[in-house]
Image (cartoon, rainbow over all chains, first blue to last red; front, side, top):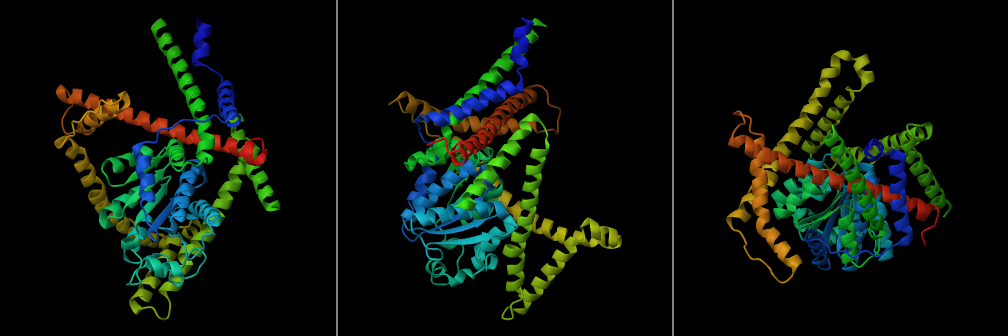
Length: 280
Length: 231
């Protein structure tokens, strides 16, 4: 009995790691096709982008780094594909210094190339500015106050896209933004909602990491945001709505066995723990 | 092309180096860790200078700029310089001037608080409180019997608002310390603990999901981009 209890409660971590790695690698080779039923939050986020018309302005904020890449980049690329397919003007910015710029710029250049979109005409990379709340308040007056120059150091009002989207007054601010799509691995999305949505009524949707997802669902429930895409499952749902087999769909196949193994080990450990307590 | 291949090999090496922590702290892991910290810090400093500090100074001090803007830019530059006094090297050379570094920090704290306190009340507390109470005050009791899944969904949408309200009230009662918690108050507080435990469990589950996503994507990168085994 003691041997069984020891086995249940003191499993060598190398055994756990080996089984986990096996459970991750095998499905990647087998590539089973997974059925999915996208949740309403994801469907609403997808429809928010789909409902934009030609010439509308989509502001994207890539507030994440490589550590959130598998969860957010698939959604980011699908959103860009939706936007470029419908000839929506895209503005890209980040509050996440170099990390947000790396993932953001790489993604938009990759998708823009695929759709033959021109920089300065179809999309504009505003870049990074520190001071999250201050930046958001500053953008409400004039984007040029915060981003006088774009990512490449040229004045943003020298590009054709600026003239097209800034309206008759020549001032670009939140009134010209039709949808804000935030990609959040931290609390920046809270600022977007609490400052920009609450004060300026900007329509917004978010794709967030699984860690952050529980904090964003209350905004959706309160109708402060139009949609939330949470974690890899959300990304997988989003790709399935776009009928795309991207990174999220490719790696989601390993998520299920890995979670099952973890649940099994938690169960085994707890059974052992309870039996040991009963015997004592 | 050659740079792409080199990049993949470097990324693969660094991924394996970080994963080698599974065998405990080791020099390969340390090397990868130091490379990451060094590159991040260096790139971050250059980017901050290039994207934020220098363009702001340039724009603020343009000859065509209004005098007030120029004046405010100079104040901002001075505040930025005062922040540098906080560096350890300056605190050794001019220990009596270190207090000056508190001035820019006071600005940041003041402005930050000013913006976020209002935002929290306007954009978080009020909408969340109304979203907690309104569905209960104007409930939708329509149950869909067309299929088991629709039945379950509609049932949850009826019960959901009451569960949320119960969770909010009981959790608030748990944090009510103005009087000793006993009797009915203790019972409600215990429900609050239970609700919070469920919330923490859900958050922890989501955290595990996030970490696994990252691990799986690294394995996918190694097998696909590096070893080219996933055709």
